[in-house]
Length: 111
Image 1 (tube, rainbow, N blue to C red):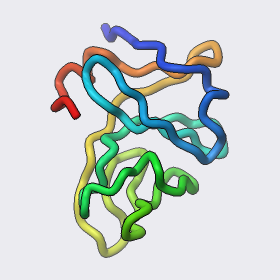
Image 2 (cartoon, helix red, strand yellow):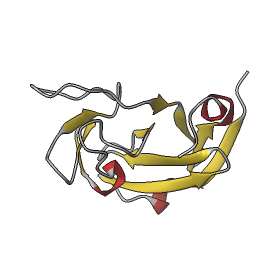
Image 3 (cartoon, one colour):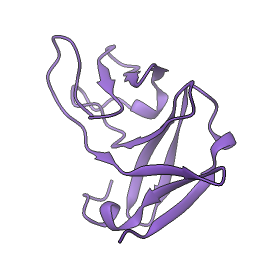
């Protein structure tokens, strides 16, 4: 059974936007799609560690602001000809609030 951390209202992140969330377990980039799906990933692009929370969200992907690498929000994998992976974390929306899985976050390297 997971323990969920309430991090913000869904409306705190604009559609096709992102926020960097600081938890006691480190920083996580949280993304909201145009259809209100929510995803959580490590914030550092696998290419040159660009801040993914500052990237452009489109469909279920984010484009890194530094070198335009496209990262899947669902899998954390670089798309196209680019190679690399970022960690993804369980996230969900409940009663209009964004929740992250605390147990899963505890096993990540602190940012």
